[in-house]
Length: 245
Image (tube, rainbow, N blue to C red; front, side):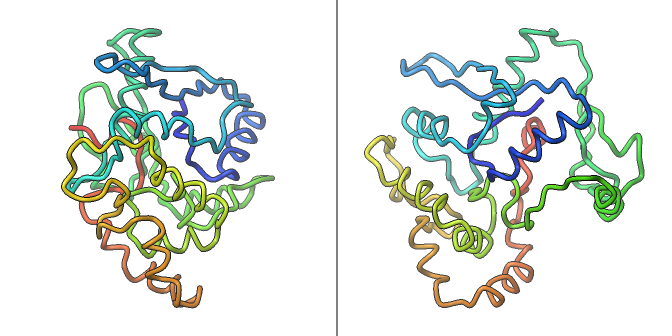
């Protein structure tokens, strides 16, 4: 299953299509549809492999209905765009009594939580990250993305220097992302700080980019590597079902 937030890097979508084609996988691609009516929950919308891609329409619908997803404890975007919609789709098609496998490796012990109905790649393989990279080096294709551009490109769980570097490297995507939060279709919902402030230091996207504008790229990359600890309690990897206890 692949829950499409519409905010992954374009090369991520190219990679998914290559994986499906090369390995003959029957991949269920879903995105969240948010009904305009308040009180009516989101529903899964199934996509073909050709329909997934960078498209912030789902994000726009979410923030119109629920406001922007930043709060001091993290964000609700994983729940709204992945976990909730995947759970509904699974129940509609296979019921509740199933086992779900998630690709968490043996070298990620903090993410290996015992939960009823879930099992992990680590049970089948002792491969660590470098083993995976070595395996992919033998393949005819690869993701071809630097780490700071992985997952949702400008994820609110990434630390600010990493987001600033991603915005520096992908200015067109960054402009579309920034403009989305500045448009009038964002509900306020009585927030204690401006709804455009979506990052953990209470940065807006543009303010974040401006703050790091004077850093040469190499220096900013070095800062990203030194400040990985800033992700704190929020994992930058947002698989469905991992963040909810």
